[in-house]
Image 1 (tube, rainbow, N blue to C red):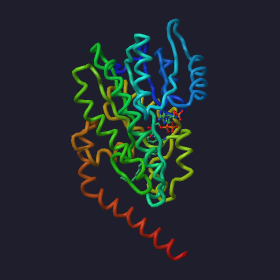
Image 2: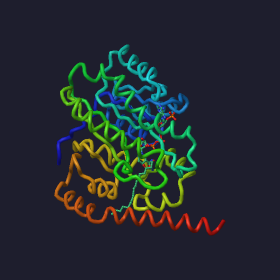
Image 3: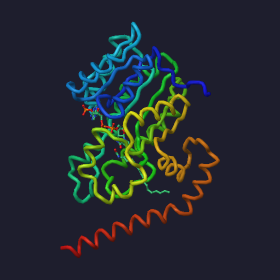
Image 4: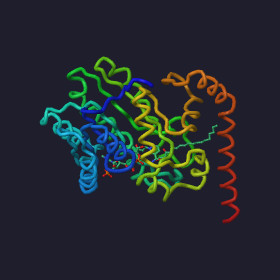
Length: 301
Ligand SMILES: NC(=O)C1=CN([C@@H]2O[C@H](COP(=O)(O)OP(=O)(O)OC[C@H]3O[C@@H](n4cnc5c(N)ncnc54)[C@H](OP(=O)(O)O)[C@@H]3O)[C@@H](O)[C@H]2O)C=CC1
Ligand SMILES: CCCCCCCCCCCCCCCC(=O)[C@@H](N)CO
């Protein structure tokens, strides 16, 4: 049995995007494990319902659950979040950035507003909040965990995700820089690369997802959010820096190992060779699907 590298009992966990999906699933598990939890998102009505639900799981006398309604894509609101903790003299032990959303659609049909939304929700909510919280992250030096939510698509961007994958790749790059920069402050930076999982956001994205996008990502069927949260927590407890929630995600990431953290590195190096040999062939196959789709649409006109 491994030693738990992600102790939560009695600790303070702050979860953005905590009002649904993976964020709320993680919040429930952390409260059940004895953590103090503050969830953050924009919609107060969702947050109050979630906190009522979380309070049912409170076991310990002095364990608390709270929420902050804030649009984290606005820096000023991230500063208000910091002030909340300063005023209460609370120093988060775990900061888990789950806020995000995808709008899968062909780029030629992409409204500019959705491009802005992708940047705001997937990138700004993470970079702004962590930046605003730096005074509480760097002082006092203590063991902390900073968890970013990227996606498998950060390793392989394909048809339909032009509004989303660039920002998930940016979250990966941001986490890679901060993993080095925050070392002296006792901060462990983890990056989660989920495969598909069922959530309110997933249901939303399925409304616009092109059939070809769904076909390409067929090897990643959507698992329940609770199952995804369990996999993430177990990986954090094992001290994993890069966290995958399905096999295909780990395989695709192994295709581009580069400077990335490894696990089962021997197998990953073998897979990186397979990726070097066949990755482009898989991409060419996907390109042939695009051409086929385009030509058959042209014939129907
Ligand atoms: N579901 C999936 O298949 C996959 C998801 N992911 C990633 O995992 C993470 C969680 O996904 P999922 O559970 O599906 O997400 P959901 O879309 O279900 O929930 C997103 C959460 O983020 C909050 N949020 C959105 N915008 C903001 C904002 N500007 N400020 C503060 N909070 C905000 C939402 O609450 P509110 O609207 O009230 O603000 C909500 O709580 C996301 O980063 C997603 O990109 C990665 C791979 C696959
Ligand atoms: C041997 C290698 C074959 C490779 C074939 C390509 C398979 C691609 C699977 C990618 C799955 C990505 C799921 C995350 C999607 C996501 O982030 C959205 N659901 C956002 O919410």
